[in-house]
Amino acid sequence: MKKLLSILTISTLTASIPAPLLANMTLTRAKRDVGISTNSNNYKYLNFSKLSFINEKAQLVSIGKNSITYQNELTKKIYIVSKDNIKKEINIPTNDLVFITTLANDSVYFNANNGVYVLEKGESTAIKISGLSNSVKDITSYNNDVYFNANNGVYVLKQGSDT
Image 1 (cartoon, rainbow, N blue to C red):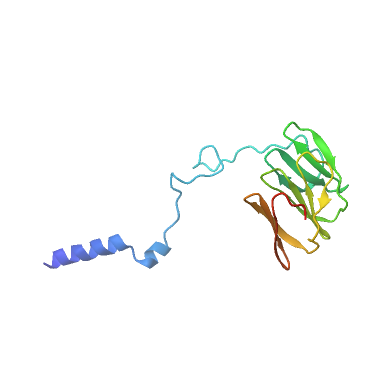
Image 2: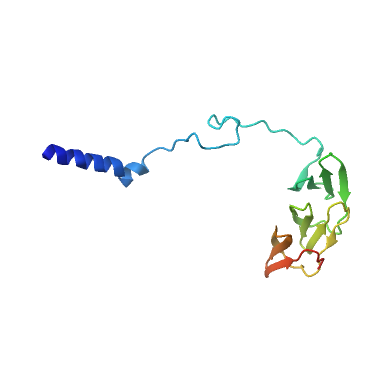
């Protein structure tokens, strides 16, 4: 009987793994783990390549479905590069940009210290959105409406509206 009781105790402890033993276990990767490598368990990263159409020092980069928008760090000029590697300079009446956001519809939003500017698809001049002079922390879209998280609240720009 003692042997049976001892076997039951050992099997119960083995099945429930006490917390101190669990804390000292090392982590191992499972086969289902996915990494950025071609062979998910070998930790060999894919080769990174430089974008040949941006041959200058860039900052504030934003990538959309059909284009890449960036600001040249030295000249502060804004450029948009299409999938076909066609580079176009964007006219924007400010150079104190904080960040650039490209949304799913390929509209590009520029957050500056004095407000938010929008560049519609195919245009070359960004226009200021009236009513947003406060500092904006985040820009996102949902159901074709654009939401702005500002210091003093959240604003929405409804589809088809420009103010």
